Amino acid sequence: MANDRDSRKVRFAAVIAGEAASVPPVWLMRQAGRYIPEYRQLRAKAGSFLDLCLNPELASEATLQPIRRFDFDAAILFADILLIPFALGQELSFAEGEGPRLKPPVAAADLKRFRTRNAVERLQPVFETVARTRSALEPNKALIGFAGAPWTVATYMLAGGPSEDPALLRRRWYDERDFIDELLAILVDATVDYLSMQIEAGADAVQIFDSWASGLPEEALRAVSLEPMRAIAERLKIRRPRTPVILFPKEVGAMAEAYALMGACDAVSIDFCTPWDFARRRLSPHAVVQGGLDPLLVVKGGAAMESAARRLIATFEGVPYIFNLGHGLTPDTPPENVARLVEIVRGG
Image (tube, rainbow, N blue to C red; front, side, top):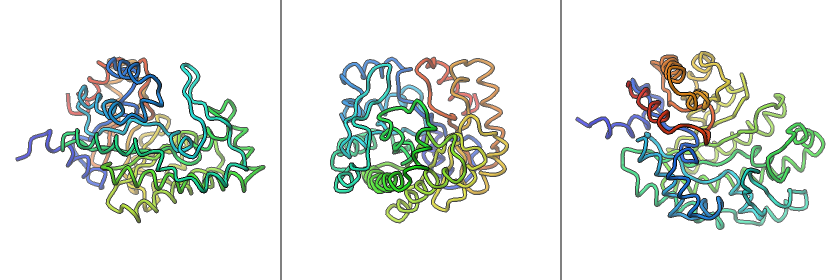
């Protein structure tokens, strides 16, 4: 009889394929990051964040660090959602305390150049990271690849960095719809190629993050978020039919059901604003639900975190569920709280 450690990858694969488990598999968004000291040492060694992302040896080590420390059931590739615009030719940098910067902001004149660029050629180090990590991971651990959704990536490309006023980007879609739609189409093509290569290199599943899907009216949400993500998922299923696809449309409210209803969507990751009972009733019948815990509860720790985690697990008892957060771990998260959270998920 297989022991518990040997069964975890089986459990992760079975759950994302639609089977309920008495103990849900667990991994956390941003599980590799500044909250653990070994990552901070690695980051200092790399020189810059971009250098870290594009150094297969160091990026693989960053991916593996939280697995060694917390024994999660899945690792997620250490990379960044803005590597595709970097590969398309935008200058990418990460200033300490300021976030990413993309220069120059994308204009309509750039689209023809983007169309002729083979983005995956410049991203070969990422695929080497995947291969190295899959080789180093124990067989009972899953490896998740990822990419940013076209709309989220486009918001950075258009603003040259994090947008100070998302309403301005929404207005640009109303005013320059042909231009925005063409940019999104280019990003769909590049993302399909990028994720396909991650799968070929060894990723067991992929997640697509649409962190800027929030705040859009339904017409715009469908056009710039849902339909591009549907196109990516469906094309991935043609190329890699056995690889699960997880979608994370952040803060889309009841529209999360439209993502769950996609035939090519295996799992929907819910944010910390999504009511858990809504997700159980309206999402679980169509796709595996993942996530939901507020990351700030892991910063808080103690009884508040433990009670919420147990209630979340109880909400999804009897249906397929992957334990995760409603967004990523923050740099001020105590590592001991993460360790305790994993214990709770596993019945401690």
